[in-house]
Length: 132
Image (cartoon, rainbow, N blue to C red; front, side, top):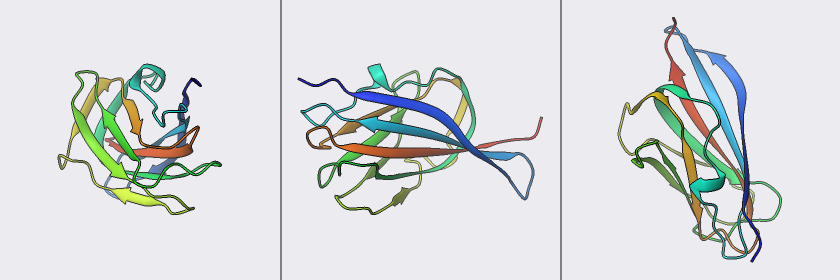
């Protein structure tokens, strides 16, 4: 069985017109031969603060399986955002499951299911951080 991989990085920072910034957190992943990425390999090394605005997911090389899901959870295991994608080079956007979900110095993890044998993708979390 092939091992899943996932790297998390801060992407661009965008100034919000009403104050604060929108932080882009990028998860670049490769699924196992069973089509999965677990939170064990995809938890941020850094704490995340702010209000979750949304997520997007897209292919990144080997197309993930049709109907794969990407789910974000907080440290307590609460799934606050899920998006379903399909094969091809299509980008999907989704709002958080709970509008205005707030992360307060929590690590965030990503779980991917049904992504196909070694499917690859990129899933981005957008968080609004208020001005200090």
